[in-house]
Image 1 (cartoon, rainbow, N blue to C red):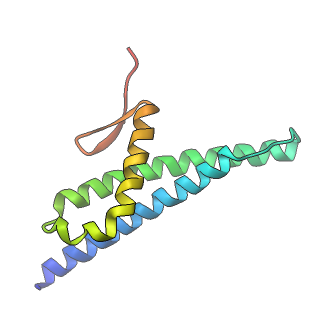
Image 2: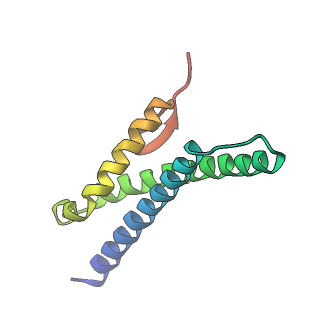
Length: 118
């Protein structure tokens, strides 16, 4: 394996790994957001607003992660070598993409874009 191929392979591993971590963080924050039980206290409202903010930021970062993952898949020379390690990740990315589409976002040319209302 040449140096260029090794660097490209290492970049792909980092790209896919980082991207998957962004998805895991978003999904964990979203799960906590959905299970939040607030008692209407000012401190509770502040914490809830911070959680909502973190969820939205993580969602934006996960969208970039999705774009990075799609880019990595487009550049893989041997996708078959990765399928065994990406099975769970691929399913989670598919669920994320479906949720984004339901929320009014779509994948166009490998980028997550918001659909405009007509």
